[in-house]
Length: 277
Image (cartoon, rainbow, N blue to C red):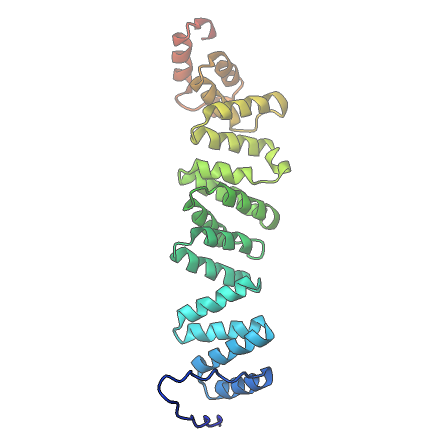
């Protein structure tokens, strides 16, 4: 049975309320056990929070958080979760939950930071996509996207290319470009990555930078499959007809985009270079 409450001494109007008597950890533990046995979760959560204030044990606060959530006290549960996060004692799943809460509250920067922090412990496609979506709502998403790529490169490199493709397919080459920039130096030097970076630059409105990148790659490592067609296209866009013709001539027939022959011919005639035809 729970101890009976102590009788209250009547106070005169205007008297200062008495402060609650301090309790030691042993007393709070006994109270917690009694409340747990009596199935009084709201009161148990309050006692556990007081106990946590004394012993600093994250699991004590975690139990209080769970009880708050189960009794519908979502604000109290969120306060406990924020405290766990401040103590750097959250699990990866709890960080994701907190990020969802922050996202719903419009705290996009905090949500993105929490998801990036959770990635090394929970490197799943879902968490990675959540981090990218949170970053996309920021005024400057690039730092978060670079951080996502860096974390995934260490924890789940197999997710890098699927996530890059998602960004390109969602017509966000600017985000894909920032994402690629976060890769480790060794990966950035990979010819396929250089090609993907040029592809993102071209679609993000930087054809000159993309052309320079592919020309440098062609002069050093050589072009990976698919890069030649992009290089010819970019050279045409930049008015470099001779280079476009030279690159196109080295492409296998199946690599030619359907409209490339007509574009090459029209560009050569405009430039007065019938000798190139």
